[in-house]
Length: 78
Image: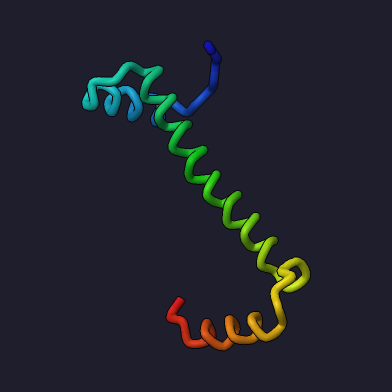
């Protein structure tokens, strides 16, 4: 798919240098950059969906199991 985009000159020049250094065509570089961006933001979608599944309103967990999970995570370093 061909497309036209507008980017600042400084980003374009840095991309050109990077493409040359990596022996990639400009199209390959931009495709890889977009692919990486989408992969990064796709992980956020997974996190959001998991948060919905495990939220208090939607969990459907047995109350005793939920209480055990809460207790086990209170001292977690994260």
